[in-house]
Image (tube, rainbow, N blue to C red; front, side, top):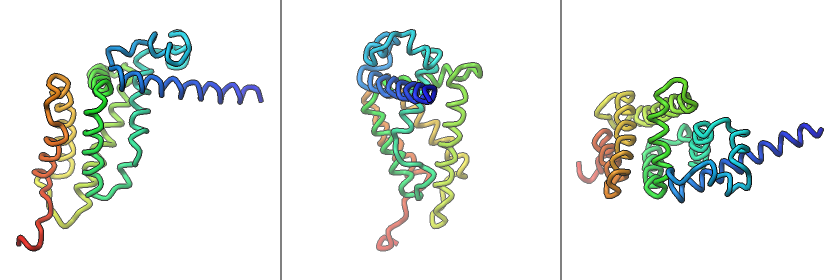
Length: 196
């Protein structure tokens, strides 16, 4: 019985560390998110953080996973109109959390190495995102997309990721506006009946 209690405390402590790291990175930025600072917020030593996560890279990978959980709605459950709205909400939210955008961008570059702790996370996340985008374009048989759904999904993902890099260099870049314009071009809005 003591073992189960100990396990539950460990899981709770791990969640507390993730939430604290998420908050530190979102509010203070990726550069300020040292193991020492995160450990201080949680009230543990940096060595204790490594006990729960093994490395800073594993901790940051789990922070991104936790951030995705916080996004709320499951994109697989959305109708085509909602998918666009939710995607744009995520892009807008990213403009309010530059530290998370920087973490995502830096970790995604490092994760090209198959041995990196975030490699599988980025493979799985990218596949899910593309599936969701492709399904939302396939679901509405009334309108016709400019490109096939698979190509559209790749283009949307590439533009969103590339815009994040541009925005980190120049915060005046209107990520949500550009993504919305792209979606309107790739999948034109339904014409209003009175305009026909």
